Amino acid sequence: MTKPVIVAIDDEAEFIDMLQNYFLPRGYDISVAIRGAKGIETIKEKKPDVVLMDLKMPGIDGDEVLKLLKSMQPSPKVIFVTAYDDGGKTRARLLQMGAYAYFDKPIASLKVLEETINEASKR
Ligand SMILES: [Mg+2]
Image 1 (spheres, rainbow, N blue to C red):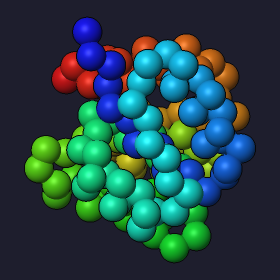
Image 2 (image 1 turned 180 degrees about the vertical axis):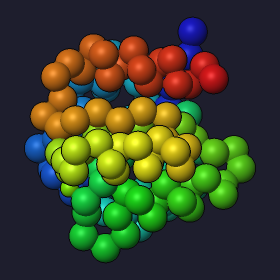
Image 3 (image 1 turned 30 degrees about the vertical axis):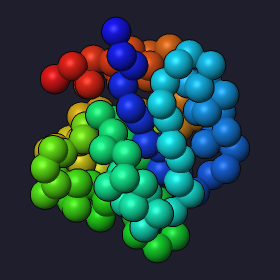
């Protein structure tokens, strides 16, 4: 079975490193970007199944990237991983906008994230 193609966009280099350290040895095709604009370029190039995305980033933030991806064909599934917390309001809004899932940072289990990625890529 082919593993999902992933693009991760997050301005936190340590988090990006952690994702690569987890997913690369497990055979996933994961590309990373630390800015929204670069992330969009990478998405156009890689045509990923799943995008892992931070919310708060300098420049184009996760919210804007999601809007843009929703108008793309095919549209990758977007999984937010963010420390942003406003009591669930933003989570509800992003899911309403079509985000596939929303995880709080620090991420409790990369295994659960992996399972969610695999599930998302099958839809
Ligand atoms: Mg951030």
